[in-house]
Figure (spheres, rainbow, N blue to C red):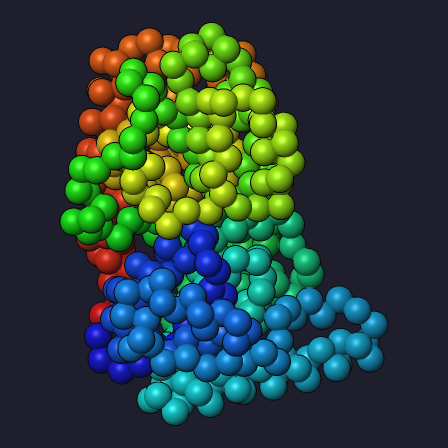
Length: 374
């Protein structure tokens, strides 16, 4: 690719959006990227991105977040002033880099969506999260007026595309400019190298990864873990990830030696290699990068039949889909897999096959080439 590309994003220590950003930067090449960050504290996380030392960045803490325009007319005039000011700031930066394209990596629906109104640059709006509602009619107006070949929305599952179309009231004619690019894994020799963590003989490990927040459904996860470890003492459940519910979950499971909340870890692939089953009972999920990482490690997957998860895990092929509120069903599925190593092996092999067919980095780049027109 020639020329610079501006990416407006928010960096985290660990998150699925970070993983997607790494793949996007690898696709665009680090030396071609200019990151726009809202907080200087995020700069420290550049070290987690390959080639981070080659990435130019700017801090723009005053960039307007939302253009809701649903207040009293006097307030709307003031807000519109800040919207126009922010559009001009990014437009001038784009002009400085010879009409550089702009990508907004949004983890909060509608944040910076008003940048679709930039007149002289291509704009791509990547949405990682679920848009459960629409904040104002300006969102629908912007999408239905500005979406086209040079202004597109990218999201990570067909399920999320449907929600965006419905909740933002985007017309059928404009929905063709909402594109789906599935999450992928940054493949490496280290990631595929066979290495496992020490564990007890005959112990079977069920792994979950993600922030400990309510929508990840840790409450039923803990109930399932207690029921399964009670019925099969040789099984352990491990959850990797920080979050506001970490201390609560640790307290609830502190009497269970085979149920562990590890918090955040840096050697995620070691845990994936040591696992036998991947388990994610989320209440909703746009797609789930952790599931893709598990599939890359040839793990059978048990996930909720919600959101974008069924687009990764096919029931009875590379795992089982469950109702996120059905405790008995989840326990029964777990026991079935625990008691059948042949079924786990078949599901695992199919996971790896399905990963390569739909979620590899090669597939990711092919899809982005079609959108970015390189």
